[in-house]
Length: 282
Image 1 (cartoon, rainbow, N blue to C red):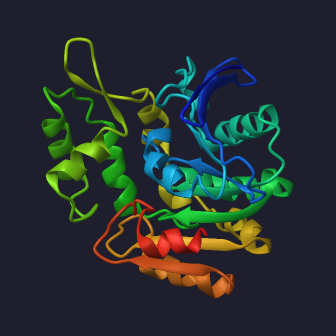
Image 2: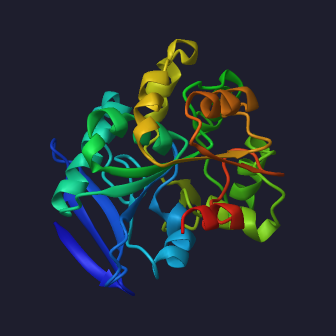
């Protein structure tokens, strides 16, 4: 494990069971006895997504942010078939073991929320609570069709503004953000190359497995129900095409103690910087 310390944030790598270097950021709180928060990003996103959230919460809790294999600063897997939840769950377990973390409150956005649900089955003793960000046990065909198109759009861009316009084209209901905000969002999953072009910061081979999936055949209710023993927050963007209002209501119906938060004017997915979300995490 190689680490560096930057402004009370430990940055480093661990090796997965099959030898892939996995990058993490560990924002240290110091003397707080509160349970650490583990942040798990969406399909093409990485630990950068949680920087602002970590800075806001670091006074009260330690925050661990993770790049899944094939994203951000983690290594790409030579076998694209390993880009699947079972492997990501195993990688998360390795991370927590290496960092000697006994309990975490898990925040999972989109794919990260699927991993959080899987952790409820695979490693329930490590979970203190969960926040699912715009994801549930039913996967919307409409939403994931848009994500699939976006994944297969393997383009480079001449500047950040052009890359942001592309993201806005595929996800027009994401939110009513300024041009500056759109650029900041796109910087979470793109990088600038040595020649100045803007490139996707994930392994293009991730799309291979996604293209093969039949989302109508994916049934996640047993995983979701494994979370009923924990404090549980579910956040939904009111304009989301990934977590439908029907599924959102069903989730509350089967686990009545859920704290259900609906964010107006936002699609998939909320930033988690909304005041109502921040208050729920304190």
